[in-house]
Amino acid sequence: MTSEDRARSGFAEFVRAETAGLTRFAYLLTGDRHHAEDLVQVALARVAVRWERLDDPGAYLRRVLYTQAASWWRWRRTRPPERLGASLPDRAGPVDDVDLRLALRSALARLTVRQRAVLVLRYYEDRTEADTAELLGCRVGTVKSQTRHALGRLRVLAPELAEMVGRDPQEVHR
Image (cartoon, rainbow, N blue to C red; front, side):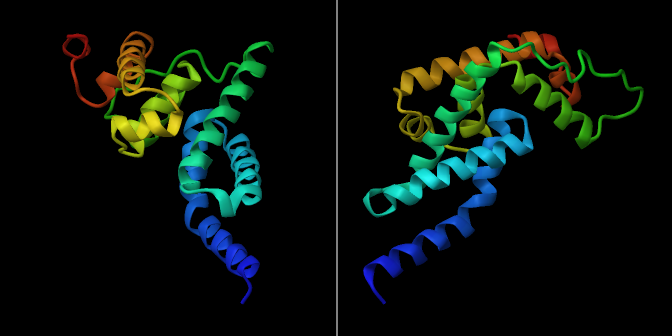
């Protein structure tokens, strides 16, 4: 087996192992399944070209996904916004997972791309502040401040999230 064949085999194995997780990450960044899949394909194409030179292809991929999502977000900002639903319907009964996911998706969509990326990396992927900073190419202090700002913004923009997970919204503000 040649070194080129080993590289192809390693890349194919990497793609099989990482695609589902990367697609979830991209979806949480964009809020759109189809766009997330497109972002992952673009990122994988960039990794394929640099495969043999990358020390940490997973970190590189997440960085590409973040920068591509940010570029897409800037482009979308110049277009009229799409409205998925201005508010969630009131429910008399307990909240189910679907309601919570929809509320969370809507709330995340109202954050900046960087804030969304920090929250997804920190709380969804359970990464440390240092890992998140490295993946996003920023300092740990930036991750901390972006996390604080993003959570504060969620509390203001989507107080229903605190109610849905059984917390008093007034308590969450403290």
